[in-house]
Length: 65
Image 1 (cartoon, rainbow, N blue to C red):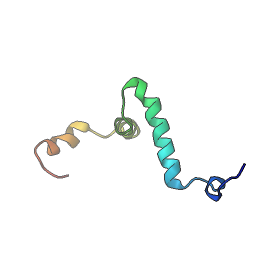
Image 2: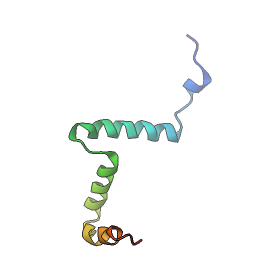
Image 3: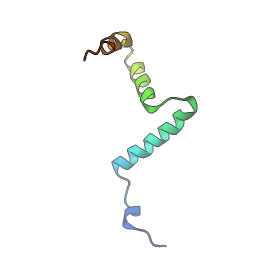
Image 4: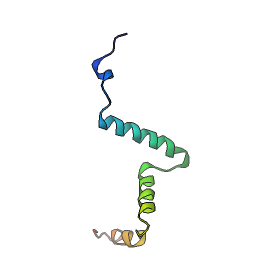
């Protein structure tokens, strides 16, 4: 069986990121959470001092932070 040069090379960083994104999406799909939502929840979990009410209030009125 003939193998092309591309098949012998390691995947690029972009290919790895896209593969991981697909894996994460498949893991989150059963619970109905998008990767973006999971990222926000992870950020809030790691930064417990973050206050979403204070963060969201200016954007609700069209102000930039």
